[in-house]
Image 1 (tube, one colour):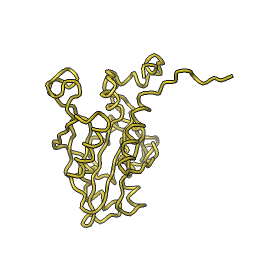
Image 2 (tube, one colour):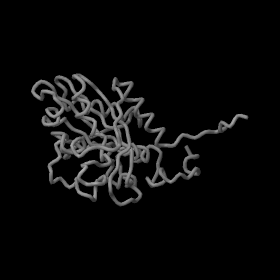
Image 3 (cartoon, helix red, strand yellow):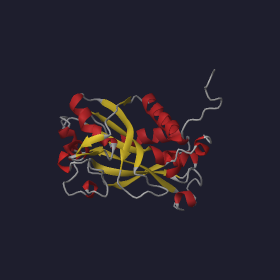
Image 4 (tube, rainbow, N blue to C red):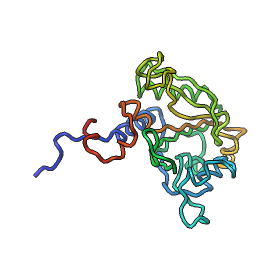
Length: 245
């Protein structure tokens, strides 16, 4: 007896993850995977996080007992950057999809677990213009050709300069509405040029090579694309939610 559902539904997180990975592979990126449990060294030290950085504190990171093991649930898929650089010669373009964890209060826009896709490009003469072109191309393929983006300064320890990437609101087209909190733009991801110390930690000469990195929050993208107003719905296990997609 055939038990295949007559009308199968794909979870929105799975759907958007597949879409994003598909777009980047079409752009020449390869896909890498990493472990969900990491060391403090790979999750923080190699990525130029100062020893006193707030994200190391218990309110942001799930540490694994015993505490002296220095192991944790990864807070970002950036943890694979230095690992990959140490095993591969430039030039390369990779994305790293996976689940990450933050010890924070749950509400409509925040969860203790969520999905992220890290991107890393390293080669000779890689510039901020290459980063902007890559991200604009990606967002146009995902949301439509009328997408516009803008970069504004942002801080992340593993990039310099760092940028926050805003996308024009798809609902109001920049006029202002509740979705974009009436400013016409929506923050979509963080990015920047790979910090020379991170390149050095990866065994790559920062005087010869440069690169850029970016992090895409898959849950946030799914909420924007499908009009989901509460992130907790995606982890509820409620088939009434999934069956809408």
